[in-house]
Length: 238
Image 1 (cartoon, rainbow, N blue to C red):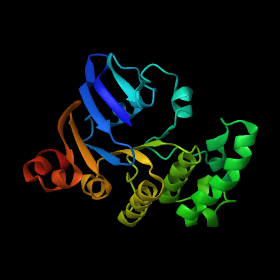
Image 2: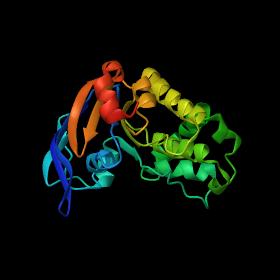
Image 3: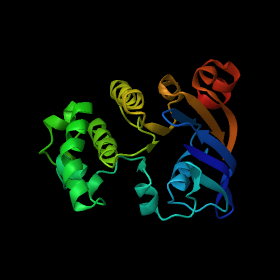
C-alpha cells in the first residue's frame, strides 16, 4: 500500500532522514523503531505531507503523494495520530470524535457520525462511558484512545500512529495495541506504527524497521527482529 523511496529530510545542517526506504503491505502493521532522534517522527510527518523532503518520494497505491497538501492526503485515506494526544480539551469526548468527519460532505457526515461513533465506542468502552464529559477530565490513556478514535472516524485505509504508549501504564498500552490488532484482523486496516517501546511494538507488528540517526539499519519480520540479540541490544534497548 505504501512505498517510501530514498527519503531525505534536513533541518538546517542536521539530516533527519538519510535515504530512507521502506514498504508497508496492505492489511499489515509495520513498526518503526529506534531511539530518540532516530528520525521516526520525521518519517511519519513526511509521509503525511507535513514535512517536505529534500529528495525521495512517498507512494500510496502507486500514486506519488509526496507534494500533495495534507488535506488531499487525508482524502486519499491516511490518518495521522501525532505524539502527544492532541485532543481539544474544551470539547466533549463526542464532539472531539465528530471532528473526524468534518471534512466530509453533509450526507457522508450524517452517516459516519452515527456508525462511526458506535464503532469507536465499541472499541473503547471507556470513551462511551464518558462521551458527554469534557476531554480535559480524561486520563492520559483515555486521551490517547480519543485521539485514535477521532482518526478512525475518518475511515482511514492507512493509520499513522506516533508513540501511542508514551507516558502510559503497560496495561493501557496493551489495550491500545490489542485494538490495533483487532482492526487489522477484522477490517484489514493498515498501520505504520512509530514506537520507542520496541518489545510492545514487535509483539503486535508483522514487520519492523529500525532507524538509527536517520538511516535504516534493519528491516525484517517482527518475530525475527525480536529474537536478533545483537540488534536488540544495540538499537532496541531490550
